[in-house]
Image (cartoon, rainbow, N blue to C red; front, side):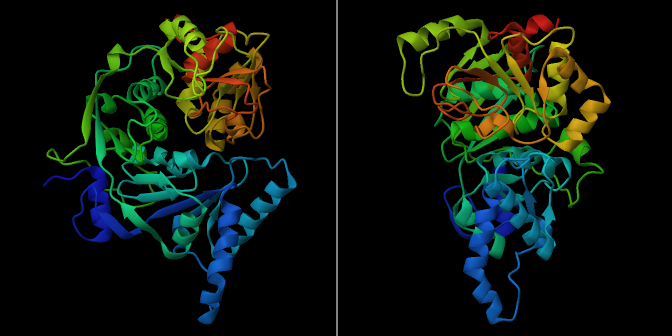
Length: 447
């Protein structure tokens, strides 16, 4: 009986064949990472719960494998409050004492730096203290977010407990994306098609010739937002694109992985990439998706049929734009944004914030003159961090704000005031909109 990638990964790590629906009492993990939101309470919980046990054997409390645990301050950095600074200090001390890798403030976002530094490889089982850990599935890994308690126990034992092997939905992609249409448009289209709960508790496996046409930056964008249709995670097979990316980068052994031809899926969804156009998600849910050509119809519908998750939108104007987050702030995203913006200015009524996803991306974009394009056009460029994505700092929205963002969520109050309106789109659409001061089609800037 054939197996999906997820079934294969779990089987290897538990030492026997397993299939969807089976409950694994102790699932071994290979990588575990913490951010500055969950890291400090997880460390405190670890010390409170395991210190006595270690002391009983004359030992200092230690994590299951210091080489497989990472601390990455990214959500609220540079620290803007005493409590945040104290939490980061705790992470630094804990990591130093135990030989754990500790990234610096400004090094980048957790879902970006571990990938670009070669820590994630096919067959990994990756846990992170953030729901967008599914980003790592683009490298053929089983990766998903966990909460404080599960992360704390995983840190001590190297296991996740009572894991149910999920079914997979196969997304068969064909063709290639047209000019002005990007990976963000594809995943928004899928979320809109499937609905917010359309992949609930299942794995979104992306396959087909269409995947092979996508870069690694594009693939991570797609897997990053699989959770927005309630997927357990997203995943993609090993191929020549991934092989080239991992060459001279991977710090762990690399082995190909793919699902068996006769693997069983809950469902198969076919998508022709060539038929897509730029997409926009309306507030307050990523599944409120419309093609850019139908924005006016969507506005009218929001006024005619409002719901708590689909609020009324008065018009297509915007006040703020954000090119950043773990979804869309990699090198290629900045290149695309600069390509649209070059020769233009940010609209006088729009605040455009640009935050590269990592220090390495920032430095490359600076060396190649990409950041200068944004700065000279009137954008604010900040050091690498999550920024306004979760409404903490560097662009918190007021009650009258209307933000178009490359981030992954547009829930009510997500980026500031609950009265603000948040639209989601690709870097090209975000920058085009920042130029025009309204939701705009980027294709006119790319011909």
